[in-house]
Length: 356
Image 1 (cartoon, one colour):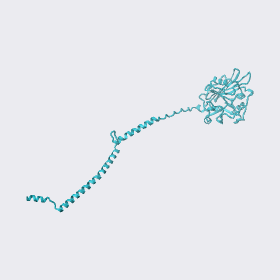
Image 2 (cartoon, rainbow, N blue to C red):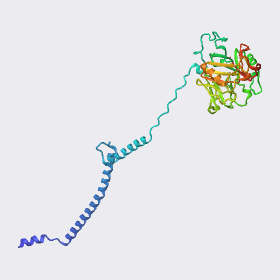
Image 3 (spheres, rainbow, N blue to C red):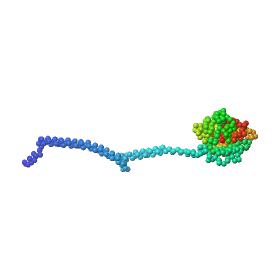
Image 4 (tube, rainbow, N blue to C red):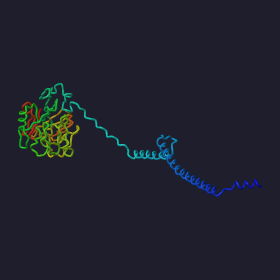
């Protein structure tokens, strides 16, 4: 009994002890609360820090076929862009580059040198008149058939500057004219024919030996270029600004065209359709030309030709192009200082000639 009483007494706390105990419990509780709060603030920061580390690691780590969700989410976007690019390329077909035109061969003939085709033998064998030199070969024949007499001159030049034109009194102007023989002799011409008598008209392109005197277009124009080619252009086909350049050596305006591409032209629109004296120029190839002067209006000697007859004559000679020059009393042919044709009424003065 005593022992049990002692034990009960020892398990009881005195008043001061209780106060101390309660203070300790309270203090420990406060410390626990503070510790829990501290830990709760540090945990989100650590999570944020871990998230940042993870993001940085993901950004620096190369993506593989088994990459992160971010990589998977970007993959469809890249495919869409590629598909869009393909569709755009299909919708906008690539433009085919325009073919580059083949450049014109830079041959001596392109610069007016026809040495490669210039005859090395005499072209005047058996001709009525002939002139053979190192720069020009000229043969002339007279043809008399069907009541018509005409002269055909076959002319080869070695260079384009052997193909000359000359103006009456050496000057350009409408009121300036001389007899073709006088103009020919003043220029020491071996051979010459009358020209287009540009001075009788206010219209018509005039180019002489590369010099442009008049650019007013008439019905048509015959152009001899420095490369030796001869072509005829109608008014609708001609552009003075684009075509009258330094490539033009001579230009005449009388007309009409007689032969084009080896075929006789339709001359039904011509105002003068009856037989008349004629003068015309023909073209075979660069450096090779033909001139015809037809006598006419002389009964019993020569009646002359119509334009159709003249065109057919050039075709029969094999000319590719032919163009009518001034006719009538003006038409005449000169060789070595004399008129060899028989112009009607003794001939007529003109403003220009073609000569060699």
